[in-house]
Image 1 (cartoon, rainbow, N blue to C red):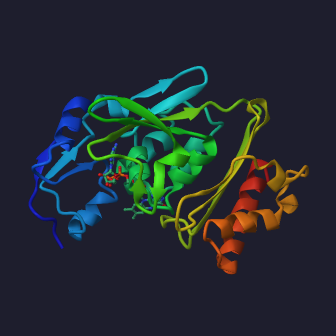
Image 2 (spheres, rainbow, N blue to C red):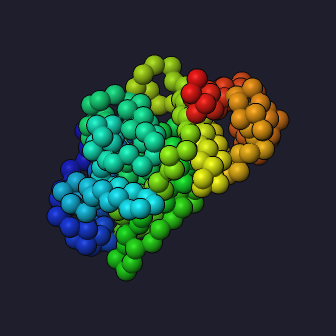
Length: 276
Ligand SMILES: Cc1cc2nc3c(=O)[nH]c(=O)nc-3n(C[C@H](O)[C@H](O)[C@H](O)COP(=O)(O)OP(=O)(O)OC[C@H]3O[C@@H](n4cnc5c(N)ncnc54)[C@H](O)[C@@H]3O)c2cc1C
């Protein structure tokens, strides 16, 4: 299949992109890396009149390091992060997650913001950034607003973005040097979306102990205080299986085999955090 005919604009600044996105006389769609949107256009699942390419906007490629966080522009690619062009404030977590997304051709073009807005439950960034406690920076015509990432993804392929709004960046807290994290995803072969994701982050200096079960078919399941889940042992074997299963059941992940695969992913994430 081929896309429908559409006009194409490549604005150089955010204000121009937002103005185009607010046009109500035509169907407007934003494109970043095109790795998810491209196939949808080809299948005519989306039939825009106007495609607004946001990759020429310098502000969306910015990387700003502050004392307690880093802000990454939404059009920073997975490969930019994999290649270390983004300062490491997460003890290597961002780089490791980026390098495990699909394969290099996809990572060269796919962007961190595009991945979040696409809101595929099996995608890597939504689970990883949830564990890291990131916030999404959103720009509309009137103002900028920030949403904790847990509130950004509303459901499968659904976000909190209003019509005409753009994600301009993602703010990620700096981990302390004592932080330990582990990320594990299961997929049948390299380059495929995950079937299950486990993420574990312990940063005692910031009183953070968080676990995330991702690729659930919906929003990631967050154990914001995972102390009870991992117990004093802090080891994969010490995981409170009933608590984890109850959490999954409450979020509609009820199939026992699916639960077992997600439990295994979380256990392996904890093992990686422990250095094994
Ligand atoms: C073969 C293949 C395998 C893949 N495997 C994985 C994988 O293992 N893990 C994984 O996480 N991902 C995977 N992906 C997805 C990939 O990471 C994409 O890069 C990502 O989903 C979308 O990013 P993009 O920049 O290409 O966005 P696009 O495709 O350009 O856009 C996606 C959606 O987001 C909107 N959008 C984009 N940027 C913005 C913005 N700043 N503000 C508002 N709206 C915006 C678009 O309008 C569109 O609706 C895979 C993709 C392919 C093709």
